[in-house]
Length: 104
Length: 85
Image (cartoon, rainbow over the protein chains, first blue to last red):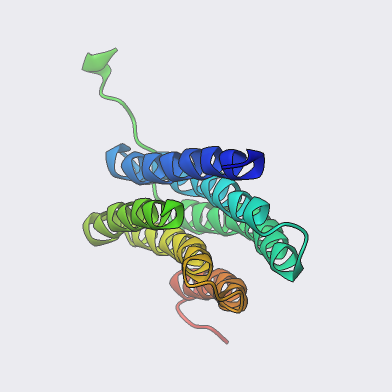
């Protein structure tokens, strides 16, 4: 269990923790716009952590290059897709959630 | 062993997103959940490639990430304009 295995184990654990947090977040949030945070942001962080943990496992090879490409691509496209979903939802008249006055 | 545990965690996350996709009141919740499931599938395929010791799974994961992004945008365009051309 040398150092790189240890670091990748820590990265893997935190990545899986954020993945499940994103899942719980998307279930518990009251409204579509609040679920965007859970699905969009936490998702891209979880995949970055898990795939960088895999990168550490494979050292400097073609596998690491492919993993790096996947991470960079997902970091570019997941926010774009989330923005596109939010824009379409907003344009089609989906109103953000309002807390009821009685709970202030 | 580490990858099987990570794979199980990613599967649990996929199940949570699937529940949101089934429950989601608006169509946009569903699109969002399906997009997130696609990203999780990319990670899961990469993990499978490492578990099975086959580096060529990463090409599948990369391709799936590309197609998932394009599919989300296509569905959004259809939802917004009711036609794709």
